[in-house]
Amino acid sequence: MSWGQPRSLRARQLLAASLGLLAFLALAGYALDRAFLETAESNLRQRLTSYALAYAADTDFGRGGEIIPPYDPPDPRFDRPGSGLYAEVILPDGHWDSMSAQGPVLPDGGMLKPTEETFEGPLPVTEISGRTGEAYRYGRGLIWSVDGDAKAEFQYTIYILEDTSALRHQVAVFRQALWRYLGGAGVILLLLQALIMQWSLRPLKRVIEELKRVQRGLASRMSERHPRELEPLTESINAFIESERENLDRQRNTLADLAHSLKTPLAVLHARLDDENGPVPIDPELREDVSVQLRRMNDLVSYQLARAASGGHALFAAPIAIESHAEEIVRGLEKVYASKGVLCEFDLADGVQFHGEPGDLQELLGNLLENAFKWANSRVLLTVQPGETAANRRPGLLLAVDDDGPGIPPEKVASILQRGVRGDERVHGHGIGLAIVQDLVRGYRGTLDVTPSQELGGTRFEVKLPPGL
Image 1 (cartoon, rainbow, N blue to C red):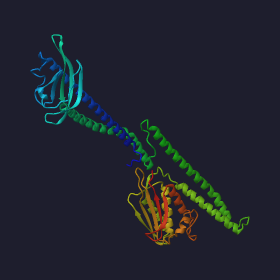
Image 2: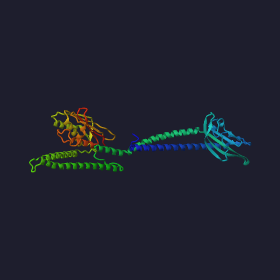
Image 3: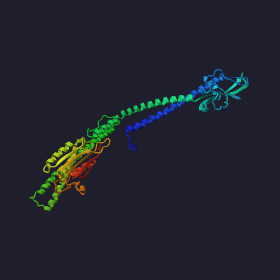
Image 4: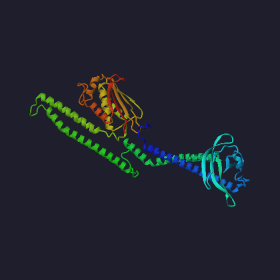
C-alpha cells in the first residue's frame, strides 16, 4: 500500500496500538533496567560498607601507630591477589593494602573526615594481568584512640573496592531475561490485540459486506441489527436507497405519463393532416412541413417512452447474464432480416455479467445489433469481454458489435450519433437508436467508440463500462 493512500481503520488502529505497545514495553524495560541497576549498586554499597565496618572492628594499631590487620578477613577474597575485592587503609603517615591489592594498580584515595562516607564508581583500575578494568569504591573516615587519650588519637580511612565484573554479570543476566520476557509478552499482546481488534471491527466489516450486497443488487436494504454506534449510518444508507428508488420511479412515471399523453394529440393531428378531404384545404408545402415536424415529435415521444421503460437503477442493480438476452434479440433480428441471410456470431467470455437494469441491457444490445444487421452484408459479430477491474468494485465490461457492411467514414461518426440523424436516408429508421445507446452508456459513465472493424471489415461499435460500485 502506498504511503500516500489513506490506510484502513484496521491498519490505522493496529499501527497506533502496536506503536503504543512497543513504546510502553520500551519504557517499561528501561525503567526496570534502571531500577535493577540502582538496586544492584545499592546492594553493592551495603556490602562494601559491611566489609569496611568489619575491618574497622577487627583492625588494631600498635603503640607506634602501626596497623595490625585482622587475622581472618571478612571475605577470603581479600587474601587472594587480584581477586577483585580489595581493602586499603590510609594512615596519616602511610597506608596498608590487603593481599588482594598486591599487584593491581588502584586509584588513589585521600584522607576522609571522621564519619565521612563516599561511594564512587566505576573508577578505572589496572588489574593484576595488566588489563584495564573498573571498580566501585566505598570509603569511611574513622578515628583511633587509646583509652580516651586525646593526644594519642589519629584519623584513618578505610577503602573497600570491588571490580564491576560481578555487577556487570548480574546486570547482563537480568537484561537478557528482562528483554526475553518483555519480547515474549509483547508478541503475545500484539496477537491478542489483533484478535481483539478483529472482534471489535467485525460489526463494521458486516456493514461493508451488507453494503456490497446492496450495491450488487443481492439485497434490497441494510439489515437493522447493528451496534448503536453504527445504527445512524445504516439508517441513513437505507433512507438514501429508498429515496433514490422513489425518485427514480417517480421520474419514470412522470416521463412515461407525459410521453403517453402526447401520443394521442399527435396521432389526431397526423390523422387530420393525412385527411385530404377535410373541410379546410391545406397547402401542400405546409402539409409537408407540418408532417415532418409531427414525425420528429413522434420520434421524440417514442424515444422518451423507451427511456422511461429502460431507465436503469444502475447503482443497486443485480448482475444479469448477457448471453440469454443476446440470443433472444438475435433470433428476432434474424427473422426480420431473413431475406439478407445475415448471421450473428458470439464471442462471449465465461461468467461476464452486466451490472444494471435489464431494460438498459435490452436497449444496448437491441440497438447495436439492429444497426449492425441493418448495414451488414452477411456477418455480425457480438463480443463481450471483462473490462477494467478495481478493488472492492463491480468489474467493468467491454461490449462490441462488428459488421461486414460498407463502414462509416470517420468524418460522419459524430453526426450519426446525434438524435434523429440516419446514416442513409434511404434506409428505414428514426435515427434515435444510436443516440439511445450513447445516452445509456453515458449514464453508466462509459464510452462509445465507433471505429473500422478489424475482424469483419465494416464498422465496430465498442462500449466500455468502467468498474462500478
